[in-house]
Amino acid sequence: MKKGEPMFMIMDACVLIDYLKTDKSVLRLFVEFIGPVHVVSPIVAEVKDIENEDELMELGLIIVEPELEDAFEAAELIGSTSFQDNLCLLTAKR
Image 1: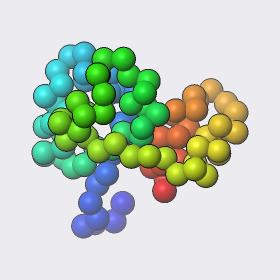
Image 2: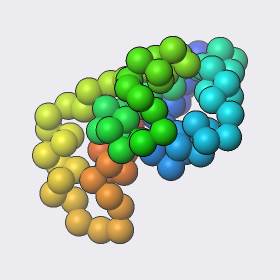
Image 3: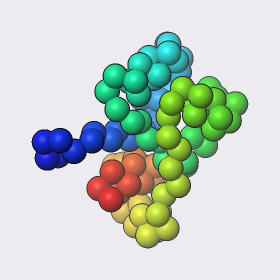
Image 4: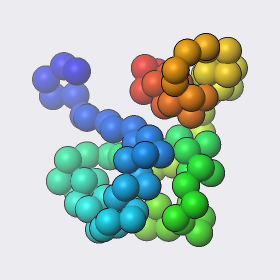
């Protein structure tokens, strides 16, 4: 990241679930004091501790739809990371 560029964060399911279980307000503080926090929509579908995307948006999180190419590539990657992890990585790279 170059100096002066805004910082963007992408949150994976494990981190999101931990914050939702402990203290949701911490997520709002991240957004307010550190910068935008994005969550890829398939990650939202993985999280059982929320009713719907609106709950995350009220906390200031930005729900993003993955690029189709990233979804295809994430599905083809073989290794120890999940489809969702691969999708977070590819979205972050983009």
